[in-house]
Image (cartoon, rainbow, N blue to C red; front, side, top):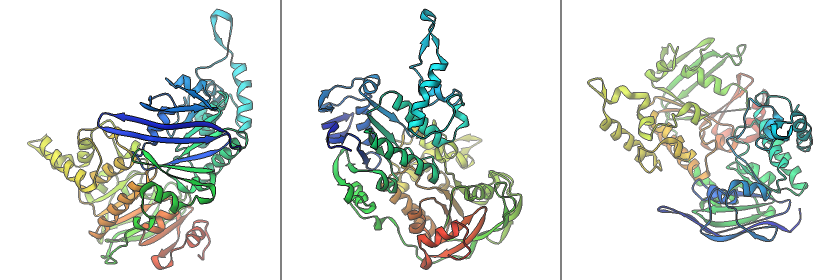
Length: 502
């Protein structure tokens, strides 16, 4: 890494109707440097990188690339200047070959006026870019046959094929396993050593600590501060983003638990049919489920909720056995699931906030077999107020809300039905730290009201901070339980890797 700036943004301002998105924001990236851009949702990160990508135009300020003042009027201009993006939602066509994705829109041609695609040239041209990333796949393979991490690397290969000098990675690991994340972070470091500058945007602060040379924080559309490599710590980043310490995130429980509300006995799922799970969750407690990806936590939750059948086992609620053949059975009993992928399976994103909140209990809002819009609106507004959902109104489509507010809508639809047991799978994935604090507050308040709350999380800090007890799964079975007095990262990981003593 050299000290020569490849990119400088100075005094950038951007306004939208009724909103000052950016006010006098500056950012500088050196050649071969990895700069992490952090901030809560709404802090201005997306607007800033959209300006860099030619989607928005700044009203004030200047952009310099390689020391030269430039204007970036559109996306193609950004690409021509060596700026490429890899977005959280991959922009690829998985029914095409790897090579076709790398050269999409820039296919080499032959045949003169016939303009036929030169497939051989695409395949040959793809190999050096794939090799540069250490991605050992056949360029002729269909993209859909690759893992998410490999598809992510193909997107980076596409950027490199465009001679990218500045690579913007937006939440690149949100859908990756721990092993895939490690490979991607190694790739970022390799690109840095090859003089590619990287702007890395992520809510996963642990990744930033590993990969960033410098951190720049935005808060409320302004520069909030900067950290050098030596200054980068988890707590320091949180303080820059939200202006307070992380310790205030986790609210301790009252310790007043009721009798075991949910009991799961000898449950076997299709994911690990040879293993069985037995546990109970008391009203008033938050029971955390930890474990490695693939340990069977999500499949267990889906079986309790009726998404997939239990091969064997029993589910009891309040001392009464339940027959759960379908989600309807779980919902009727008061057992609700907030799924891991809120956009695909937790929400109907094209519907409004009101419609999503009332959807699972429409029978509560009917009058003479017709849905009462007024009754729906009363309940929706009650949840918007109680959960502090930041939305222009209840008729706003959920797709237009931030990740944290989408998660609150999922919670709101179940809270409106007064749950007895709430299972929350990865409650804060892809959510900024400020929204995390609010989600934790909501879950704790729910537990304190007597609900049995089960939280499945791959975030070690989260599961240690929010839980009253932790059940650690390993290869389809519970390897051990930990009471709060015994919590430690080492003990959780020992169980997660199958050690019998933590």
